[in-house]
Image 1 (spheres, helix red, strand yellow):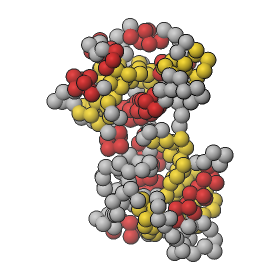
Image 2 (cartoon, helix red, strand yellow):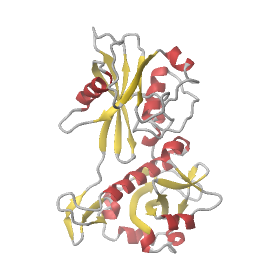
Image 3 (cartoon, helix red, strand yellow):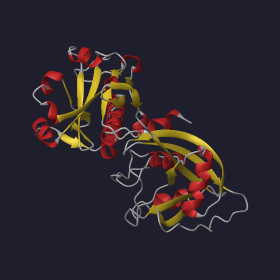
Image 4 (cartoon, one colour):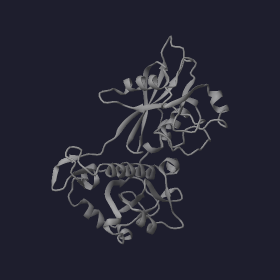
Amino acid sequence: MTDEFTQRLTLSRHATDRRADLRSRPALLDELAADARTRVIVLNRGKALVQGRQLLTFTLDQLGALSASESQEIVFLGISTAEAPNEPVGTPFLAVTVDDSAAAVLGSEDSSWGDLRVLGHELSDRDAGLFTQALALANWHRSHPHSPASGEATVSGQAGWVRHLAGDDTAQVFPRTDPAVIVLVVDEQDRLLMGNNAMWESNRFSLLAGYVEPGESLEAAVIREVFEESGVVVVNPVYLGSQPWPFPQSLMLGFRAQVAAGFDPENHVADGEEILTLRWFTRAELTASLDEIVLPGKVSIARALIEEWLGESLDQDDAWNGRPA
């Protein structure tokens, strides 16, 4: 896949060395607290505090007024490999989730709480990667307060990268990611198949997608999901690229698949539950329909795959808040 395509994968961009080797250091967070270079990203209700098109970061001293009850898990994100204003290469980054009262204190007239799905494509490589990583970990901590084995409460460890029972760091729970395939389905005429999901407005279309089931390969998931949602039989799934989608914890794996020889592409049937409408598009038909239909937003891998097939970027910039794509 081309570098141009991978650059379209907004949430796959990064400019941070995660330094996993440091996480097991018992005093790491104390060391970072004593390092004047350390900067903190603040999250609240799944959004990050931003200023313009840049993450707004804080020193630990600036956050010192917040009580422990106002902040949740502190997570070590890594060391930056790209500079930003007043933040040189080598800046250590932490992330913290705060409650509404702390969020109100931290906000200002010059800042706002930004949604990654809306502004991700406007952020730098460094900020897009940090926001994506921080949000994925925050969502995991929020959804795993108890051990899945015993039901007992868990606490954070290894600088936010493990949860374990209090007093027993051997019973560990690690961050999870749910793989999902998203498929660029084309027929012999190189037309593109898109569908309208039941959760969306009727004119919003995207590629077919679904979660990989236990004991299933990615390629088998592509063939199964496309058939389940559209009745179309596809063959030869080819992997194109991936992008994290932390809403709450997915990894979107992009594929291209061809309609099977001998299958009539017009014999598609929407499943009526997830997908309500299916349409084939030529390139000319898609560009001519942009005043009629709404495509996935620029942050999504679906948009990157569509533009790769189309051979050009599209100006349509609608916020994407539907199912993972």
